[in-house]
Image (cartoon, rainbow, N blue to C red):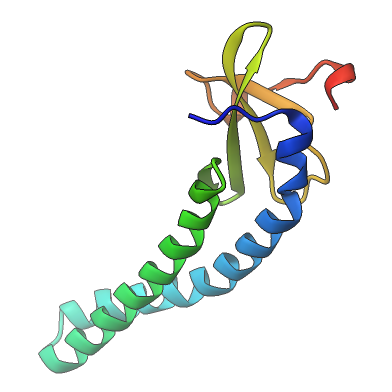
Length: 128
């Protein structure tokens, strides 16, 4: 597993913003398509249902491909609402995750590997 320094993780923010911009453009279309599929599941139109399901699967595949790019960078996508990313790191000799949320211009927080975003803590000032 790759461990990130704060500056390495921060250098990826522009790329992450680009990825999430794209994902957030696709996600509402996937949600709309999912709603259509749910409505059609109760109807008598198996052909329409099959078409809509295929389109939904395509959109979900697109989202997953974009999120996979984050994984390939060595980071972990943790959510879309809000968009969150964790970066494996070491702090004070222990494994932690540096955490970032779309809209933050720099990485200023971390949390333990057994904790989530809601338990995040401020990084020591000298690290950011």
